[in-house]
Length: 421
Image (cartoon, rainbow, N blue to C red):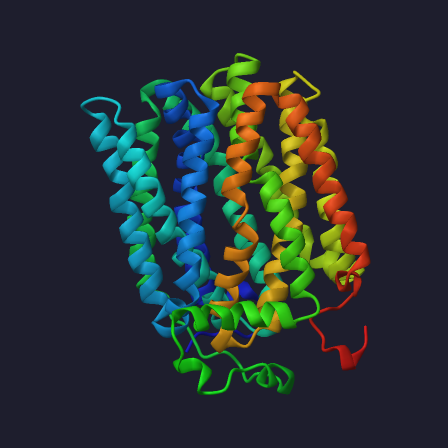
């Protein structure tokens, strides 16, 4: 059984999990830069970039219909291993195909399948984290994982931009493929434990035995029903659905703005995205303290208000340092909000439902993302990045502020209502 007492740095399995996922994140940052650039090099079209992003998101959403059921029914560690191996093989196909000539059909085939395995991995990863640490360490653990990924992401885009400029983005995607295989080998060495006894409030939310024997749709609806019945998760899911629609294609917009509107190189794109991930590092180091001090509601709403303001200003400047700084603020804000909402979901959900609740949460709030990516990148091509960023920023700010009118404003929503705030 893993040693989970005391500092997280004394937890052998958490440290191993942190290390291998950081390596995988380093590879991911290569594809994060290289895939949009590969499509842009081949087509010169921001609409095509948006279509690839939308296709990947749509595959993730469809997978979300059953991902939670799978995660709650199988060994989560072995599931993560399978997802890593599958993505490693799939992404390796892209550079192999590009040896002969650009093959866009390979991207359109690989990306959605890899997106499906990515959704399975993300649901399993979130559901597995509480089995590595103590309950009161969940936010801290998520912060360290988020921060470690950010360190890799600072290095990754810079190196990826250089690799793309020197030998092509298809080689950078090959690096990502290799990182998945290394991650899979590391997952084999991680040990998990049973989650600590659930509280009476959590037990009260568990489904009756008859519900667990229902069909796939009923299994998915078990997670959706939990979200709907919970006074905090319901408004959080609704507001995040709107924010995801608005923000899903932002990376494509930043890359298009730098490359096509301002005429900068692939290396510059890598540097900007690397600087932006410093915001993620800041978020991971501060989120636990911010949430303890001002509570979940103020943390989540404030972070998304700040993000909306940064997005609104993004297209107003042609200065690369200013664009990088605004992207940094965006990622810091979304990092604080994202870590807070993930930790809250892990804290309030019974372990036996965690996979289904996570799957339902991501599927529902991501459902509008691909549509948003397609529409907003098309709008940027027609009307310019400046107008679209202003629209996204104002919409994001108003959506976050609406949270003041909901139960999100409670300072400690992870506690039952009978305990007060």
